[in-house]
Image (cartoon, rainbow, N blue to C red; front, side, top):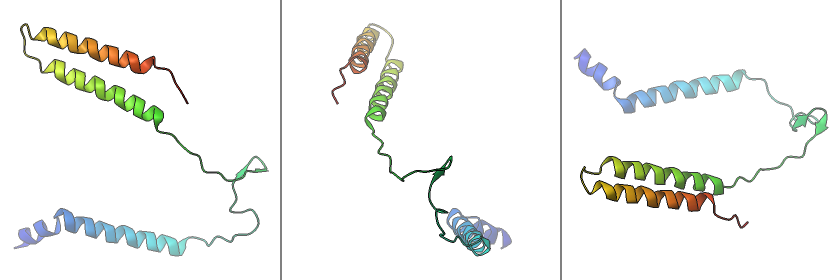
Length: 115
């Protein structure tokens, strides 16, 4: 009987709910114990070496990320295809495939940047 109860309490959904409640309790108690912030003067402004810095939101681009992701995808697919090729004359197709992958990567690396 106790083993069945213990098994039920250790089930992932119940364990998740238990720890969610524990951490929410800790968060609530920490919020009550933390000092209150008074928005006086420049207390909530960004500060750097005595200068006031205006806030700005940086805009990040994904162009380089997609370039690198495509490169690694091509390399991983090429490695998978070559690793699973059967032995014999069909292996020459793997060499041809690697040559085409090399040319595709070369085209990606040496392409002109038009921004």
